[in-house]
Length: 239
Ligand code: NAD
Ligand code: ZN
Image (cartoon, rainbow, N blue to C red; front, side, top):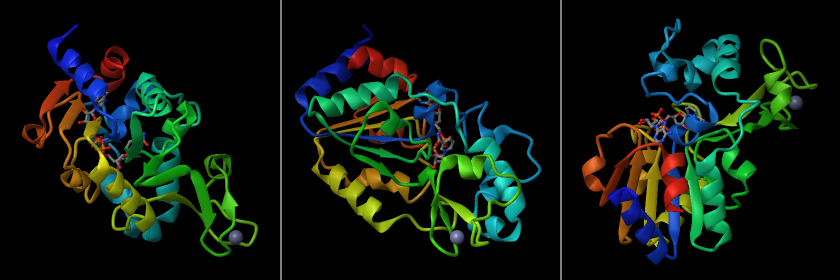
């Protein structure tokens, strides 16, 4: 076994309050594209830059085009959890892992069995009418055409945090509390460029700070252990 993975395994063995902080790279092994990899959504030749399509102002000004993009690139009806999701659920079950904090909106951690999941950017599985507040399921939005409309006539909006929108206070405070109490923080599959989420790592005061990421990030030097690899493959070996 590779020395770094052996070290990760030892860290996991000695830790009692592990928190996992992940991003889009955690779901690429489930066939979901991330944003910033070479084959990610940001490299595509789309008529608007993805950052602007996923902003609140674009949603307001070009609502129908927002939903076209959203259905195509942020809805994953057939995605299944991968080894990363399953190994984290297993670590929680054994009592070692206290929380998963995710920037993803795909719901795959819960599908794999994780219970304490802080979804910093919401979930595509929840959708609400902006007029009457009625909740609608994934298929309601995914299978609709144009702008999804509630029976009351209001627009049904996914519970996904767009650029320019603020994160849910309860989710943020739960996530920060978990990080502050952790003795090990595993950060994985994230370019650490989306704020405020990426900044939450600074609350970690524990011993073992690990990064598992396919590509290097601008924050690599802040981590005690950096493994450049696929998170599903690494966790399969280490857990
Ligand atoms: P990002 O696209 O900016 O970065 C992904 C990072 O993951 C890259 O650095 C890449 O090298 C790495 N990576 C890709 N596959 C990996 C793997 N198998 N193992 C380890 N590392 C891998 O993603 P981000 O930092 O999460 O920021 C993008 C924003 O868009 C977030 O809010 C994100 O959740 C959202 N988004 C969500 C989904 C989803 O719900 N699955 C998909 C795309 C984007
Ligand atoms: Zn309604």
